[in-house]
Every structure is written in C-alpha cells, then in structure tokens.
Length: 255
Image (cartoon, rainbow, N blue to C red; front, side, top):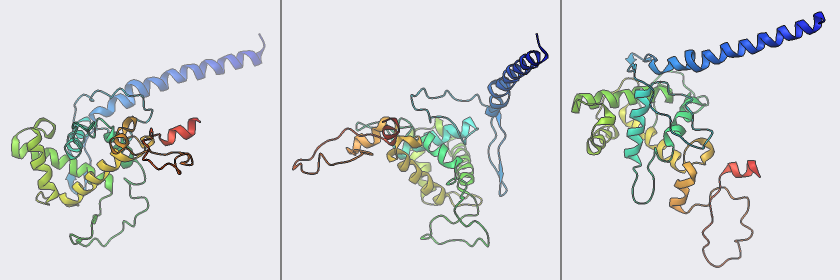
C-alpha cells in the first residue's frame, strides 16, 4: 500500500470518527442540555429558570416545526396556553397550537423581527402614551421573556398554580388584566406585551404555512381564502363565486 493511500485512509477514518463525536455533542451533550437552561436577566428582571423535562415534540409533517428561539420548556408551555385562549379551538376549526402558531412565534422571535434588527433602539427612552404602541428599550424577544415569565408569576400569586394548569376562565382573567395594563412589568408594559402576543397569534393563524403557522392551511380554509395561487385567469370570467382549494408558497417551490 502506498504512502498516499495510507494517508487517504487515515484522513477518511479521522473524519468518520470526528463525525461521531460531533453527533454525540449535538444529540446528547449540547442540545440535550438545553432543557435545563437558566433564566435571563433582562433590565433587572430575572426570568424563571427551569429544570423541567422538555415537552413532547409535536409530530408533524412540516419541516419547519422545530425550535429556533425557545430553550425553556416551561416558558414554551406558558406561550401555548396563552395563545390557545387568544385563538381557541371551536366548532369552526383548530385553535392556535393546533395550527402550529407557537412555532410561528418561536421563529419570529429568533429572527430580525424578534431582535428589532430594523428598528432604532437607542435612548433616551421616554414613557410613551397609550396611543404610541410599542415603546420599550427591550427587544421583542426580551419582551416575551419578561411577559411569559410574568404570566407564570401572576398566575402563581393569584391561583397558586402555574399558568398552563389553571382553568380557561382564570387564564382569560389574567390575560384581560395584562391587556388592561394592570400588571406591572419591568422594561415594558403588560399591555404592550399582550398586544404583541395577540398580533403574532393572529399572524401565525393566517400566515403562509411556510413560516410555521397555519398548519395544513386550516386557518385559510376556515376563511375560504385561496392562499397563494399562481393565477386567477380561469376564474375571472366566472359569474359565480368559486371555492378554490388553497395552496401555499411551498407549492410553487415544488412545481
């Protein structure tokens, strides 16, 4: 065997063994340890820590139903409980979590929107009026860290239970208190947090499934919205309303 062949085999073996090590770090060490991640200190507000076992992943055919921002399982459960009260399941169709809205919000917080990449975020920070909307030194992902933790804390103070464990009526009472700005938070008002949470919930219900929400286009189906059609040329001359099978942006990529 030539020296060149030996060198090639050694290099291949090294790469093969290295991939095992990397896989072990990702599968069992690095990512496996994220479930017990400590909380964040944001403008003097210490978000909750958890050592809880990560919740069961939702089995779904969507490739984009994966976590990009949340690493705290308890925090993620609070989010799911809150959005299911903002957009609950009923006889018309699934609720927010059934539509995958929690993944939509997770992805938004991980991206430019959640990090206010296109917003001016320098001081001075003056208190805004009720008509000015989002006025906070916190970035949106930090607003969610503080807000979700406050939902949990407020629930414990009012009902001695975690927010996901209280009744639906109790959840509605708490969310109403946040919407009416009756819960003091640090760095942001509870009204601002609720407004962003509500807006993202509805966006997740009706956005293209490409972005993580509107699972199986069920949000569109409830509204009889056709989604992203390539053209309407065959329907323009029709004198009757036509119900069209909705399609998402993914359809164009696969065609």
